[in-house]
Image 1 (cartoon, rainbow, N blue to C red):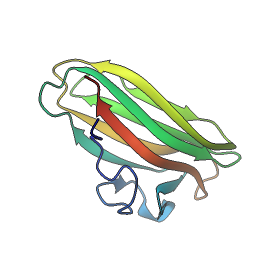
Image 2: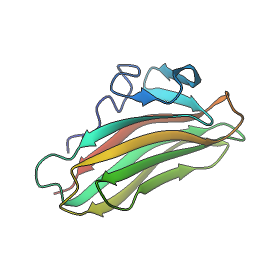
Image 3: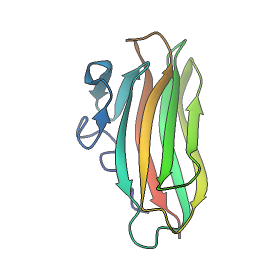
Image 4: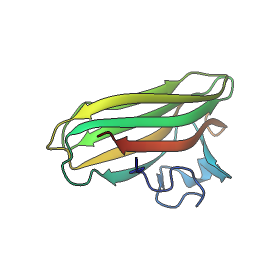
Length: 134
């Protein structure tokens, strides 16, 4: 299954991603680290025949006192899908299947440090994958 997210492995640093505050995001080999209260995001076209089932997965890790959230918002309408990891967790692979309406034209994928000491890089993300299931 093809990954619809560009540079989801961060092999090209922050290429394809837009940061709310670039000074509070760090890219290292294979993952990115974000500090609260910031995030990075990208718009992901769904391709033809957009309705159906999708699979979202990512490797995530948090330092003590930090939390991490991956959000996928179907556009123009639809319920957001979340992967959440609370503080002080080692690398964990999270995944979720979800369905979207045929009217979905794209997804807004957001990786955010949704808790933690401001300016401290404590939310880690890697291998972010969004793929359409057959």
